[in-house]
Length: 271
Image (cartoon, rainbow, N blue to C red; front, side, top):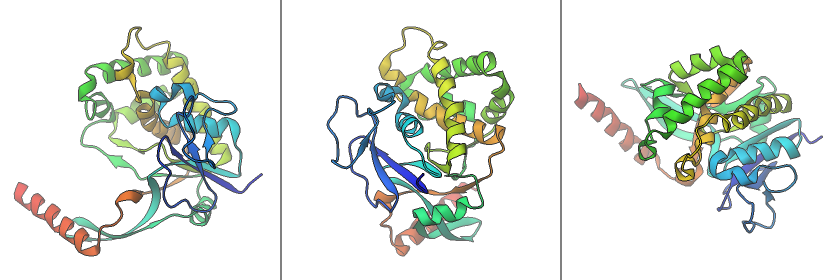
């Protein structure tokens, strides 16, 4: 068994900065040409590539689970990477002056102590439940709320062991975003065994007649919330890191400082 395999997923663009032990995986590839001669495809082997419009990057997660093994295994998104942040605090604001993208060897170093590497917690002013029903979904009308109600029902009826933890997460204000994870294989496998049965059952609880356009990517967004349920319920010992967009890491120290001072000024003006 290989030591570590990290899949970087994309559906149309070849990712930049592919480190050692990183492999390209094309998601939603069913019926489409390969974006690279060297990429793996999520329509090979055991797959759910046909569900990509609804599952988003989760079709890649499913493919990795069903078709690949390594002592440590994970999934990143094409332009997002885990990074170590170097920063300092001034005037109760954080100034980040440098990021170091984690390589496979860096990740292995942390996985000697932790079960998983995950995205840094994202805190919202409102509850996770409220954010899912409203923020970022305005053009979808009532669809997010209807789907979330179905999630409550399916977990309560089909997976009651998780219900209290699910309600605790949804009433809190923290998620671990981006559906990114690198973990010991046993933890990765346990997460998939937790997640996909819930999503599979959910299809039967969502009202008939939903417009597919409004349904797009919903399960991908749900997974970001359910991931924290898995972490809490199983007491996973994890290390969280900031996630950086490698396409927008060109800001100079001067630009970062100017941005920092502008944010401080906005905060002062609000008082």
